[in-house]
Length: 150
Image (cartoon, rainbow, N blue to C red; front, side, top):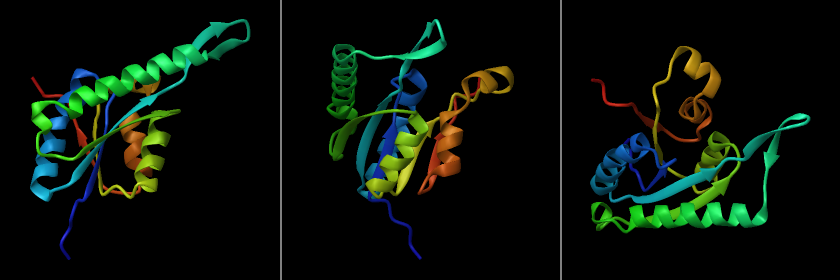
């Protein structure tokens, strides 16, 4: 059985590490003739309040965040590095791992390429790992890209 890749999902939080993972995204896209779907997920912003941490939301602020994320995704898609590759851009909202996995399932993605910050110990306990949750629940294969080792 030959494995083919027609759609690659490349979630990004615009960090240096997640943008570095795009080298792999582009290589797979060119090798398999796949289209790339760039996805940024806007997670809820929580603020300390009287009853603990409460989600902060204002329609103007949320619209501004979404427009900003979409503009940044378009800049990536329009860059010379993606020349010759079909690229779509999407912005989602919610818990990043859940949005990534449900987006991949709904759009029948063949491969997810996601960066992992490689946190361990206390940092992993506090921040968790979006990449780890994506790997555990993904409807397709996942390539995780770790930080370069020094």
